[in-house]
Image 1 (cartoon, rainbow, N blue to C red):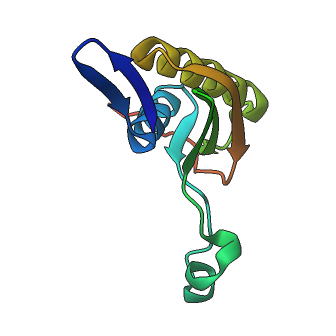
Image 2: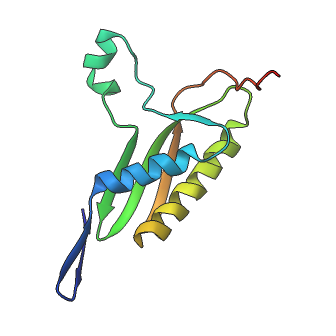
Length: 121
């Protein structure tokens, strides 16, 4: 939790709020189908500790954040380019909305979604 003392009290931003901002910022990037850990959907996968992690993690140390986002890009997109745009948008959005310095945004392409289909008219 990020804590700042101000006149008359303190302001706090929970890690869950920072993670939610990161998730929404990642979804704004063209080419991102979803933000998901991409873990196996079988019962074995659901129970396995190796596949049991959040789709966004926030590590705070000394008021500075390091973010990890698991994205599902669309098939056919330039995955590295999409991931780079996610890094930039997540960092910028968190810093603007919260004032928290983001030192690092790790982006993991955790799966691949079917290509977008244009609306037929």
